[in-house]
View 1: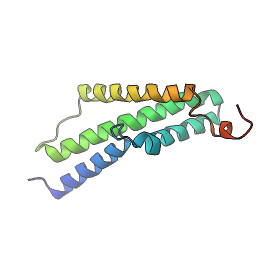
View 2: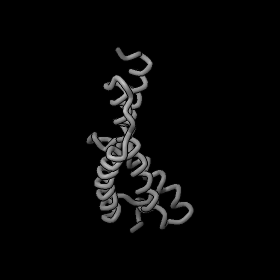
View 3: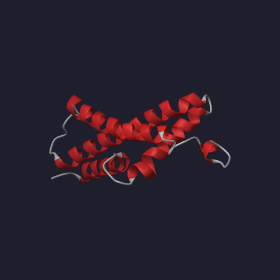
Length: 124
């Protein structure tokens, strides 16, 4: 039988991972893109050319962290003994994240996502 502490730990990890993971229809709009956008914006204060690269990096980090935490949380709750998060698991999580990243880059290239100052009237 699972201890309450292990069940709680796994449950919390899984919930945080699910919120960050690209497995929900709403998470990109509500969680990951705002976090990635914020990171891109912070680095754009240094140089506007850093906006897109750091937005992509932030997006990767949130998606991969979400998938890893979700996997780790579910494994903690379901398995009797903990299984090590392996290379195959990481490669699968990275592949999923790359697909969603391609979508984000397309949105930036189509000017759907821009720097905050570019949303002001009179800006291109």
